[in-house]
Image 1 (cartoon, rainbow, N blue to C red):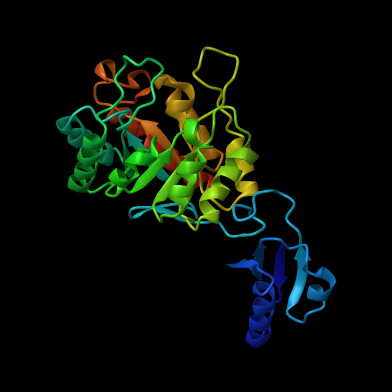
Image 2 (cartoon, rainbow, N blue to C red):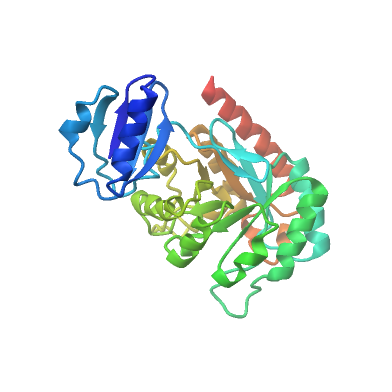
Amino acid sequence: MILILKDHPDPNQLENLENWLTSMGLTLHESQGENHLILGLVGDTSAVDIDLVKALDIVQDVRRIQEPYKKANRKFHPLPTVSSVGDVQVGGGAFAVFAGPGAVESEEQIHRLAGLVKQAGADVLTAGAFLSRTSPYAFSGLGVSALRQLSAAGKAAGIATASELTDLRTLDAFEEIDGVILGPGNMTNTALLKALGATNKCVILCRGLSSTVEEWLMSAEYLLSGGNENVVLCDQGVRGFDSACRLAADLSSVPLAHMLTHLPVMYAPSMATGRQELAAPLGLAAAAAGADGVWLTCHDDPEHALFAGGESLTPAALSTLVQDMRRVRKAGEA
């Protein structure tokens, strides 16, 4: 339930209203809209007398939120949320570019690519330390040592860092990493969601490969209800029937999610298609669709990459694409 208050509500009346509502066991969340203060009520609101509340001088309207996600709901929080990965803003008009190799392969490799990715115009360096692979014999990452190397490379190059968390037992190892990525396979991992909800670490929450947008937002609700509001949504595509691409690129999720939630929404063209030559057109399409950022795979030697080489842009191609996406985004805002 949300209460839409009149402009400049009387402070004493507002305090009395809030005390009355909290006495019923409700949690209150204030959000400033463009013209009104919105008071969101979280909890069992069945005992709230709507007619009585509407009769109060400072209340303009009372609305029930029908969707199961409350804190992630744009009705609850009309203005866009701006999340932060280190010093990098995502959302609220900012367009962030996440880029890096599929995996940390060596200390020398990640330091080299950190400089190349930043030079290409990216804002956040990404690389995997723990890889979920179909085959148990495939390269599955360097583990905790890769996170240390990624953090050191980011600091040396002056760029924020992000990597995927796959196991709750390794959460402490992400202390020096600016953003934690929850991949599609962990979108509904409630243990990870609850643990990250208790932190202030930026969480990039990827949509499950067979998940609806509502299910995606319900996972975000776990993070927000735990107290962590530093959340970014990222769509990597969904399962389709055409084997020409890894996944079906559901770009409609970007404007749709923006309609439903105040959280920033990103898109991952490289992961969605699994094809290097399709990353650029999808990146431009994501920028045109209003994405708050994109996540791209980049490697300076894609043919010999230990992971995700087929989807990796070269640093030169990344640089061109970043410039083109920013131009598209600027044109869309004009």
